[in-house]
Amino acid sequence: MPDSSTRQNQLAAALQAMKIPPRIQLRCWTETDFPAIQRLSTLQGWPTSRNRPAEALFAWQHSWPALVITEEENVIGFVRGLTDGEITTYIAELLIDPKHRGKGLARLLLDACNLTCLLASSEATYVFMTGLIALS
Image (tube, rainbow, N blue to C red; front, side, top):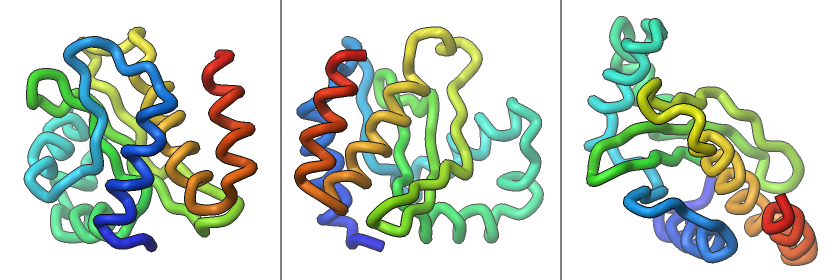
């Protein structure tokens, strides 16, 4: 798994290829986001982060990509994935606050996951995928 600095750099490069809506920020998660992740998960009826917080926090600490989407500093969505760094990325959790659904935010999180993982694997693949995402 890449270190924090590498993750930030991969995400920054990926964000340059993406169109982010006004007032929306997409960034790497931090432990200070965990209460908001717990709140959104509980609202959705996902009990793990509430019933097993230590295990859920451990999962977030050991996952990449792990991103949040915010509006005015408030976490309104997140994605937690696992990758081998070369070919496969598995999405373990993806959630958008119900008040913010239908705005393309989940797609934005998935595109960011794809691009950050592609940056780590192959420059040629990254160029190809950024073109596809720009067309969509």
